[in-house]
Length: 184
Image 1 (spheres, rainbow, N blue to C red):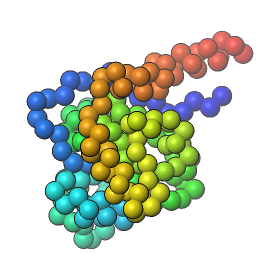
Image 2: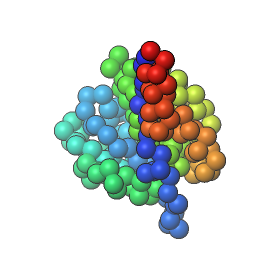
Image 3: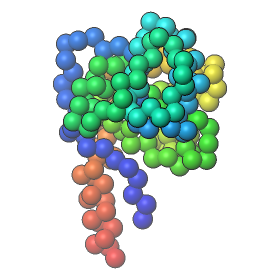
Image 4: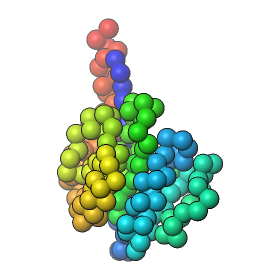
């Protein structure tokens, strides 16, 4: 049995504040699997949108556009609030065999927080089967088009969020594992 990543849905599905969410957000590793060129293109194509990248920035390029922020790592407890301050969740991954099998846990967290997602096109992200909330790209021109669509898409409804995370919530995953073990 292969049990893919999941999400603690209740942790992320909280009422959004009255503030206006803006910009793009990424939370995770900023290492060789991260696509800095895509972030630079996104930042120059959308100069009025803030791009906040949370994570240890060991591999950050020396010069990034002014609308890119690198506040460092974010703790798990603060993630729902940090995500809800943004309009779109980011998964900019370089084209690599390492990313093809990368489990999209952040994708689930972004959607649970009500964010549409802009992601590199990989087999695992496509397997999430979430065309109405995840916008993928495979080239620079597709990146800017998908980014605009994701921004225009706006916050997900609570029904969309619930439908998407129903089968990726850790409680569902635990029941799935329990059923498998009982079948042995």
